[in-house]
Image 1 (cartoon, each protein chain N blue to C red):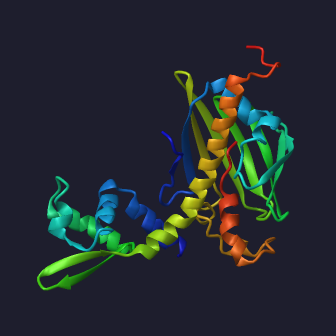
Image 2 (cartoon, each protein chain N blue to C red; image 1 turned 90 degrees about the vertical axis):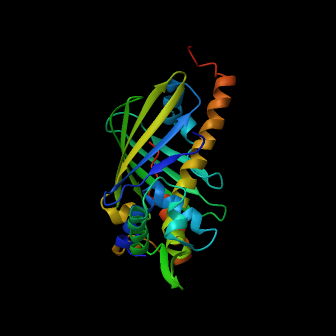
Image 3 (cartoon, rainbow over the protein chains, first blue to last red; image 1 turned 120 degrees about the vertical axis):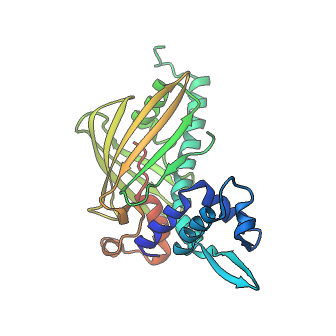
Length: 115
Length: 161
């Protein structure tokens, strides 16, 4: 994935409505009305979000009879989040270890502690 | 918050990391500035941490080496800028496997009624560096195979002060 593609994926993800749409699509394809239902948002507004997601490669759209369905494309999401997941894991793990050390220091203050 | 919050703004070469820590600010500050303490928590559990230098003062140098189970060593070093108070700790950060790609971090510790909010702002030399997608830098000083690249990316960017 190029840096530009990574940028557009993160930009697409930087919106709670779009993240919720992606979450809904993990359960299967859906049309615009179905995707708009949980939000107090018009279908055109949802369609604008779908366009952003489609341009980022996170969803694809196809027709079935009269319905226009959105489909989750997992690969760009996985590629974009892989490095972030590792970065997140590094920080989480360091902070968890810090939590453990701090708990130890608070329960057994060293003799050099002047408090 | 139980997990670390990481904000990656689009089109900007920095990352913001926020974490709530259940300990007083001064103690958290000690954990960052005492070389014997930093060695006990910084980095993944599966790496052995050896702190060579941790000279916490304006212009002081730092270096540590993280060693994997198979003996592979990863060196990191940089310099502290400014007085390193709980309000502000600034340092530079370089991963020795990727020389010339230096990042900058600022850590602020905020008092939260007995707890501490740790906010780290990390600035990279480019958006590509931030995203770990360094085209030209990939071959420089890196004699490892691409199976190591994932691990290198994870090590390049984080810089808890």
